[in-house]
Amino acid sequence: SEHQNALEAARRAVDLTYGEPESHRWLAESLLACCRWQEADVQVRSLLLERPHDPDVIALSGEVLRQRGHEETAAAWFENALQRHPRC
Image (cartoon, rainbow, N blue to C red):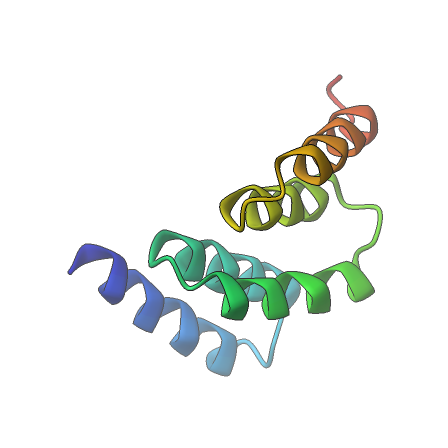
């Protein structure tokens, strides 16, 4: 499937870029698209350690929480991301 192909490409990108944060973000997004919530959560937690103030990473964490059924907690993370976004 298209999502599976994106997931494999994201995994290769992580390997080729020696774990650059952007490739991990892409991998997390691909895992979400494939409904692999737990694996996406692991990637996002790693990203949060490296980039705790990055609004895109914070929003991605909110999306993982939303997909896992934690609506209220996810909303707080989305609000946090919006407050930190430089264009807001």
